[in-house]
Amino acid sequence: MSSALCVLGCGNLGTAILRGIFTSIAEKGNKQTSVSPPTRFNACVHKEQSAKRVEAELASYKGSNELKVIAGDNPAGIQDASTIILACEPSGLQAVLEPLKDKLSGKLLISILAGVTVDKIKSVIPDSNCTIARVLPNTSAAIGQSMTAFANDSGLTADQNEMVKWIFGCVGEVVEVPTRLMDVSTALSGSGVAFAALMLEAMATGGVAMGLSPRDAQVMAAQVMKGTAQQVLNGEHAAVLRDKVTTPGGCTIAGLCTLEETGVRGGISRAIREATTVVGQLGRGVPNPNRTKFD
Ligand SMILES: NC(=O)c1ccc[n+]([C@@H]2O[C@H](COP(=O)([O-])OP(=O)(O)OC[C@H]3O[C@@H](n4cnc5c(N)ncnc54)[C@H](OP(=O)(O)O)[C@@H]3O)[C@@H](O)[C@H]2O)c1
Image 1 (cartoon, rainbow, N blue to C red):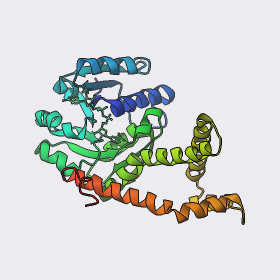
Image 2: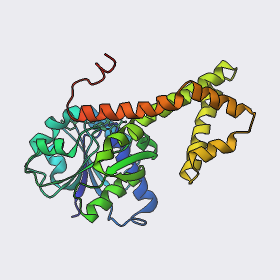
Image 3: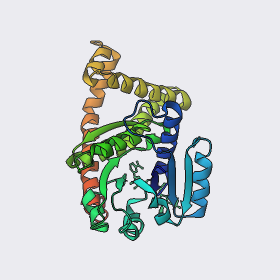
Image 4: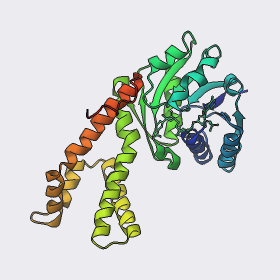
């Protein structure tokens, strides 16, 4: 019997990851992948009502894959799994993992806990003899459009490396970075969803102020962001794209000058730096790092 994949803490992101995997298996089977996709899946949650929610959400996606949703029994969930995605809240790390420390030997443990380092996880499960990978997907995993950062320098075998890339490739794009760049990757691609949403909202607000309906303004702003992003993903440099739209003496340069005068570029890049700093502090256990930020 092949080994299972277990999602330990199957909340919003865990469910999105399983849905992406099931969808990908249904569409591609085991073509276009160098790994053998698992066919058995265990989803572990804390409460019975969460188990019902996960079952209901995944029922129409699981296809011929075997899915066991388990409430309040993590040892049963990981027992037959060679790969575990740790997806509980960071505050639940100790409570979820510590009781499993003698049951993880030989397994691949993939943590998606924002800001939690591999060393921190090792301190909870010393001598557990498992391989730990740190990855950071974002909430766009829910629609198969995650930007996932993967720290690929923590001693994974080639097969384990491929498995991580396959799993998160099922919910979007994967970029490999060294561990030292995981905090900035968390700020840019995890928190970045909120930053992009704020920019989108601001553009729409300007449109509404000048007479567009709120719905039309949101759709326009969203489609502009989507189209711009796709051109950059196709290989266009953002600065070249900006230049192409800018006619001398025209309306775009008027708007761009306003953005530069109001410090938008500096503000956004500072937001990334600030969020990076706070991720690092949270990872080191600094209590409530934002509290004293501007004292
Ligand atoms: N939001 C982001 O942008 C983002 C980006 C990247 C990574 N992350 C990370 O992703 C992780 C999950 O986020 P999320 O939004 O999916 O959280 P979530 O919806 O709150 O899910 C957490 C899950 O953990 C389960 N859980 C809690 N205690 C448990 C226990 N003792 N045993 C088994 N399961 C337990 C919960 O079960 P119950 O429902 O039964 O309590 C719930 O299903 C977090 O660590 C977060 O840092 C978040």
